[in-house]
Length: 272
Length: 270
Image (tube, rainbow over all chains, first blue to last red; front, top):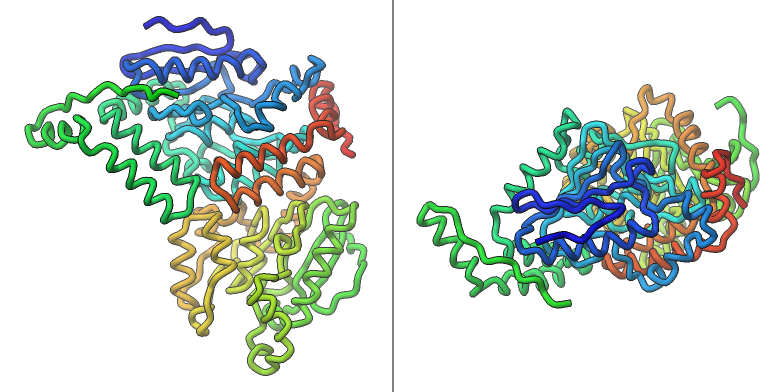
């Protein structure tokens, strides 16, 4: 399968792992109009490719992602108006969650993650970071509201830390070590140069699991963030039962009993 | 802090002060471990409202005088003069509490600076602050069930904001155990431990002054978006949050911020 060409992203495949790499290193990977449009294309392309079992998202250079390109906003005469319709309808397509990607997504934070960069931390399934990565949210320091990305994070980690970042703005940074303590990330890679190697190894472990079971699991767990406890368990039970009768669901126990590697079915992309 | 704050309204059980852009709300019944009697319960609503209405106050710090931060409703007054507490009991029953910034719909950033024991109803002020820091010798406990009382509001707030097992353990073990400031930091209940403890107010003032440099309008909309998110499922919360986000578009701070950033100068907020 050949990939589309991208100007502001790199999209690659290494074995069963699809890579989505922010590629505006000289602008600290800030998201301009073009990158915003390419994100939707890239997520859909990786999601549609059955050879891709797991997706890793990282950045080129010393930053992971620093949110919307403030210089473009301040100087192109259009400003935030380009986002008005998609924000008013909450129909943005930046992240895997926005694009309803049900394959596992690992965010590998390679450096600075600032402001809108938190979208891809909040909306990843697994987050790892280089030991020199830092996290901060300068929105209110440049007169902007902190909203969607922090709301996602608040469901997934201690809230006080999210609020502190939201209100302190650019005057303080969180270290990778503190992010690990708080459970915002699950692994620190040291030395930082090994980040991609470690992300690939982690992704290959995950790629050994049943694609269909992982997709249903992801729908159940992400869906649970929408509901109260009992309703979430009911919806989760429906996802659980949906696997019963699927070939993977009998193949797994059989391979375990026969002490061999299981042969999983390819994941069918659900029609939109 | 060297300078005395400027006093405004008169309070018996609180100190309400201004230090630069920072408003201070200080529990001031140190001989009663800052327990809330009927007077303090009334004064809290007035103090939050006063600080919220003062445009020179950009950020509010909440702390206590003496060795305790806050130890909840004054149990001595409750048992000896139950009639004095009647009005507050009705508010509790009707979920009309006015103790905290959240109860009083204060949309300025609020920092709780926990200076010592925080017990029972004192946890309201931890649960409902945006940011919580603590002196190294601060402790947290919830003795409600040890006194035959139910833990509800304050723990419900905390279970939305930190690991739940810790809140349940504190609620059910009552006065038999305390959480240290160090453990509260590990759990993400607080974001800073101040050692030595005497530095707490200086650190709180310094943190508040950093925050006071940010756009007041953007912070108010951020606070509405994030606290509102605790009410809803994720997608609905993001939709409501997106509306708060867009509400800033066209506000002068919202164009001034990126412009000041591009021109490498300090922003001038409305």
